[in-house]
Amino acid sequence: MASDSIQDTNPTIPNSSKSTEIEETSPSTKPKLMIESYFPTLIAFQDWLDVISLNTYLKEQIYAWKAKDLEGIERSNVRSMGAWHSKTDMNQRPEFAEFTERVTLTVQEYFNQLGYDPSWKASCDSMWANISPKYAYNRSHNHGSTLCSGVYYVQSDPGHSGRINFTDPREQAVILPTYTKEALQRSHTWSNVYYDPIPGRIILFPGWLRHDVAPNLYNGTGKEADRISISFNFYQCPPDTVRNY
Ligand SMILES: [Fe+2]
Image (tube, rainbow, N blue to C red; front, side):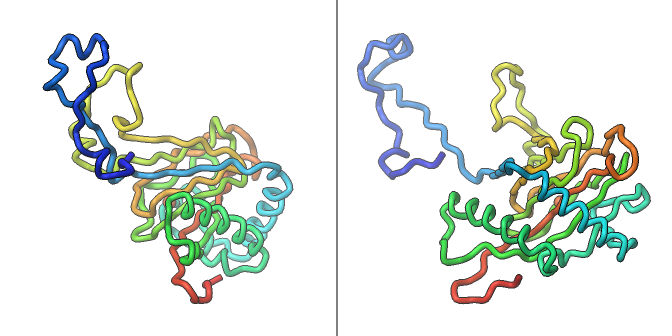
C-alpha cells in the first residue's frame, strides 16, 4: 500500500530495541527495507444475498430475449460451441432496469472505495447476457479501454461451470516468474487468479485486464446445465450530465 505521508516513504533507522535481527547486524547502519506496492490490479467481488427470485426472473427474461434473437452476436463466446451472446443494450431494456440499477449501485460503491470523485457517477455503457451450454467457453480477451467491467452469475454450478481466469497483465512478469515455496506464496507472485461462478456473485475488474472462462462442464441436462451470466462495462459520467441509461 502506498504510504500515507512523505515521511513514511523515507527509509528509517531502526531503533535500538533488543530484537535478534538487529543484534546480528549493525543497529546503527541498517535501514529498514521498505517494500511498497504501486500500480496494483484491483478485482472486487460481492456475493449478493437472497438472489433466488432475482435469478429466476433474470433467467426467464434472458431466455425470452434469446428466443427473439437466436443469432445474437459473437465476441469472446464461441458460437460453434452453442454459446449465445446477446446484443449489448441490456441496460437500455426496461425489463432489466432494476437489475441495471442494482449493478450501478455496486459499481458506485466500488468507485467510492477507490476514492474516485463521487460527483462523477458510475454509468453503464453496455450490458449483455451470456448463455453457455455444456463445453462452451470464452476465449481470452479484454474489454478495451473500459474503466470498469464486470460479470454477474445468474445460473451456474460453482464446481463445474467453468471459472473465470484473470491473467497477469505484465507480460514480462509471466515470462520471468519468481520461484517461491508454495507455503510462502503471496498474491503478488501469482500469474493467474480464478474465481468460482457462484450464482449471485458479482465480480468487478479493470476493462483492460485479460481474462477467459473455462468450459462449462456441469453434468446436467437441458437449460439447467447452462451457465448464465451477465457482463457489463461502466465509465464515470461527468457531473451535471444525464446518465445514459
Ligand atoms: Fe469479458
